[in-house]
Length: 314
Ligand SMILES: NC(=O)C1=CN([C@@H]2O[C@H](COP(=O)(O)OP(=O)(O)OC[C@H]3O[C@@H](n4cnc5c(N)ncnc54)[C@H](O)[C@@H]3O)[C@@H](O)[C@H]2O)C=CC1
Ligand SMILES: O=C([O-])CC(=O)C(=O)O
Image (tube, rainbow, N blue to C red; front, side, top):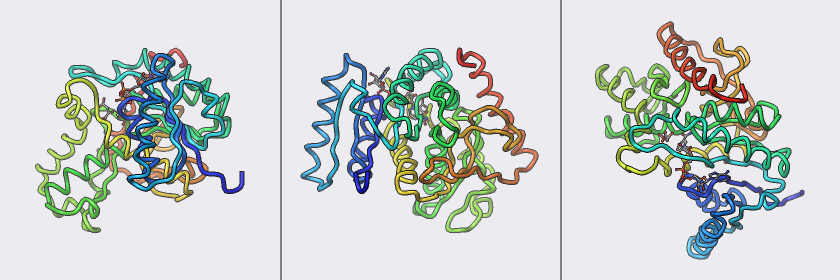
């Protein structure tokens, strides 16, 4: 292997998949293979070629390939799953479960066949349950199957806080825990602007409004777009996770991981603070929670368990 370039395969060449591929290449994090179904092979090849033709202008060196053949994904370091259907206005993420579970099972079989040592990062919704499905189907250890929600949910929270305070987003940190649904748990107590606790900077009612907007952040975009869901911020979030793994950064990042007793939950995938590095999930960080925070997390976990009940893999 030596100094060979890293390789990331992105399954699903739709809005999130294509945007993720382009960001990975622009940042020269890896070569990228984009995979979609055979009926979409030409558009997928077209997107990949179009991205590649941006490389001389933007000055990045990365191969980008579009395909429907999983052989092209062989020996990926990371495989990102964005394949499946997205919600439309009036739908919840959970309405996608039956269709996307089938897609998760079929794509995971192919991923595992060609990249038995990769780390899989799942985006497809309902993402907590879909990450669980991929974990079961892959047979991979838990540190190599993780899901994306917390980076995005936290990014939304940080955006709204920065707007409220008229400050740089760079100085705002936050932590959103729980399932990727409307009862996710933004942890205000662990959120800061330039190291100053947010609770001392923003009145309680304004903070509550920001928390509520964060919880419904996906739906806000779905309603505005009218025919699909968010993709720029989700793709940026996937790329942050991929970078942490590819560069073994050991970053503190909220991620959907398999819990075995942590936070009092066992046998489910849920968003919690983690350390991400070269092995994928390096460590789960257990924060001290107040009774109110615990019960909010419990409620969010119940929603995830209700979705998991309809999984055929459960
Ligand atoms: N976890 C999160 O924070 C987020 C999750 N999502 C979810 O990501 C998923 C993708 O969203 P978009 O990219 O906007 O949807 P999209 O409809 O633009 O793209 C999905 C792509 O998956 C492809 N596909 C379907 N079945 C496939 C299969 N068996 N193998 C390979 N490709 C297949 C489709 O042909 C399509 O190109 C949705 O489930 C959405 O809800 C989106 C944003 C954030
Ligand atoms: O809202 C959706 O359906 C897509 C998603 O998960 C998000 O943008 O948070």
